[in-house]
Length: 339
Image (tube, rainbow, N blue to C red; front, top):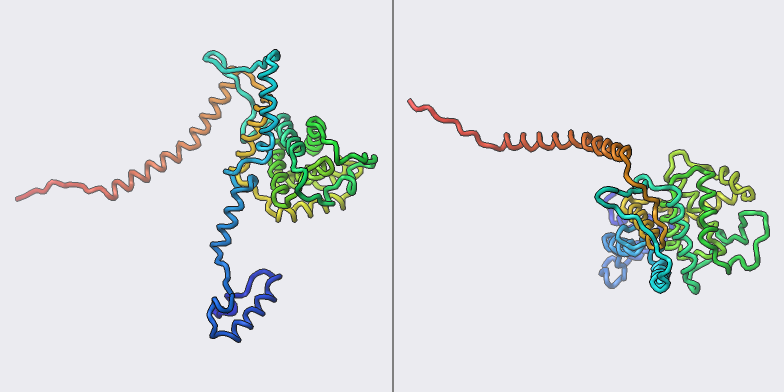
């Protein structure tokens, strides 16, 4: 406590032996300066700045960094717009609000639409696989479908060459969500964990590993997001040919590759939600719009009234505090009575 020996020892178990040896050499040559010994320890503020710079390039951690799936989809979106401009014979009808009719969807950031959120997440995974880096990235055995098959049927020889279609990805994700009764928010968190895995572990999602990567992300997101999480044995009831030990190993290695960072800030969640909406609009996968009916307008009015009543007491308390401060600080002038 308070000695030079206790404050210089590293807290990491792997570095304790090296720290002690450094201290012994430092005590033997105590007359030498810090520059001569070469013991230049990095300040903790410098390490924090480096971490913050790295987070700015990681979309799953930093709210200002653009999502990976949205950037990978830009090339295909431009090509679709060009084809629609050239082949103008197929006109797309879109509903717009007017003074007499207002069109709304039932999709909000707090309560997303389950069906269309899963479609958007499947589309984002599709663009990840289609526009992947074919030369870089690692392939881990735990995600290889040939080494760890999800079914007893024989895996095709070209299983890692054929890119899956968007419908195939959607059916796989929809089956897991419907069987496990997961929510739409869990689908957004699944996409966050998937991109965090690709960034942290520097791996590539491809036709040979996308199913197990998505399965691991869904498994982890359901346990983090839902209060009553689905157990690994329950997923074995959905995927009949997979074992509990395989699911446990998949979850363990997925967590280690994420460096046990399962935190999803609200700002990151909102960014992924709105980027998924942008992806759906650019791919003509718009959410269903319905005209605002009288019943729905009354419900919206009731919700706004509840919110107004909720914060009315807070505003009143703020006014009382300001009035009391004014009364304390104010100077009262009293007329003097002279004899």
